[in-house]
Length: 213
Image (cartoon, rainbow, N blue to C red):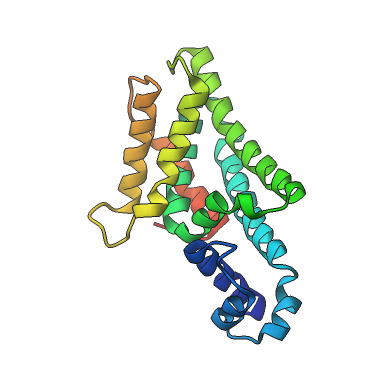
C-alpha cells in the first residue's frame, strides 16, 4: 500500500533527524527526501519543531501504552520487570531511527514542548521504578541504589538500537530473553527466567506495534 504524503514526510523526518540531527536537517532536505516541493511541505508538517515533537510524542505514547498493557493487573514485580525489559529491547531494536530521535533530540525542543515530552518519558520510567521498588519491598530484588539500577537498565536496553542487526548471529527474541536474564541478575534475583513476562512482551509487540517475531 502506497504511503500518504503525511507518512512520507514523517518517514523522511525520522531518517534525517536520526542521521543528521534536528538542526542539521534543512527544509529542503526534508522536502527532497519526502519527494515533495519545499513550498508544500509546511502544509503537511507545520513547523519543523512540531514535526519533531509529533514524532517523539507518537513514539513515547506507543511505548507507554505498550508498557501499561504489559504490566497492568500483574502482581508479580519480576514478571512486570521482565515484560518491560523485553518490550523495550524489542521495540528499540525494531525501530532504531525513532529511538535515536527520541533519545538525542530532546534538547532541540522549546522549553514548554520539552517539558511535555520529558513528562511522557518520566511517566514511562515510573513503571520501571514501581516494578523495582515493589520487588525490593517483597524481597525478590536487592539493590542498594534502585534509581541508579533503573537508569542502568534503561541505558542498557536502549543501546540495542545502536548495534542490533537482524543479520547478526543472535535472533531478536533470544536477545530479549538474554537481556531479561541480565536485568534480573542485576537486581539480585536468584531465578533468571520468567517466561510469562516474555510471552506478554511478544503479545504486546504484536498488538501495539503490529510486529511479530
